[in-house]
Amino acid sequence: DDSMIYADLKKSGVCLGMTGVGRIEQAGSRIEDLRQEDAVIILPKPTKFSSEKPVGTARTLVPCNEEDVIKVPAEVLEELTPEQISLTPTIVSAYIVLEQYGSKLSPGDSVLMNAAHLSASGSALLQLCKLLKLKPLCILSLPGAPKSMVKGEYGSKSAWQDADTRQASPPTVRAQYERISELLVTMGAEEVFPDAVALLRWRDRNQRMLPKLALDGIATRDSVEQLIHCVQAGDKETQILVYGHGAAQPIEVSP
Image (tube, rainbow, N blue to C red; front, side, top):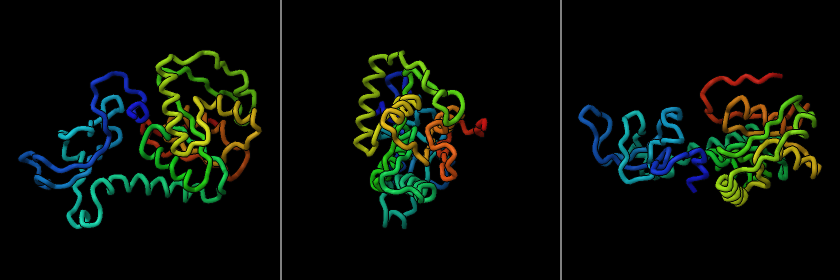
């Protein structure tokens, strides 16, 4: 579903695909390390292409710079296909995140995520949570949807109870939200929320414990602050892990 991974795509006619696998069809005269028929993984730097105009690997012929591809050695190809190799770092990274930061969680505990719909890493984390019998709570923010922000003291009900949530999303955004929400639930999400305010109101109605672990794949100041409001306050075991590259800038959060 292209609306899941590229939720901020604003126009048609854009070839999708941030990463991919393939074989070299032709190499430039100055390229020394790549030859015709070499197996490669297309893996540009995260900040080189935007989600509005990705490198476009969903096609049979992709023009690339040498720096955008990684050659797969012949001895590796005897054990793994390029497709398996390209997925392995994402799955292993997701597993290490949960192994290192979720080791104290028990089956049935909640994990908060805000980017399960934005990348392969988020999708892998979500599905691994399901395998580990954890209960992922997903925040699904989409471009064009009204944003209700939690503002104020961390752990305080006054920070969110008076937030204005009366503005409705446009029909197209609402349909997109419903479609992606259904997919996230199928992949393992226990509940899906449009923003932190909706999550906190759901938690208040159902008298649920807030998560001790939050995974931030958006990596901006606002995204971190919203997750801080949604985790258990005052618990030494509460953690927020930022794994997304975001704007590739340091994040400062007021205490």
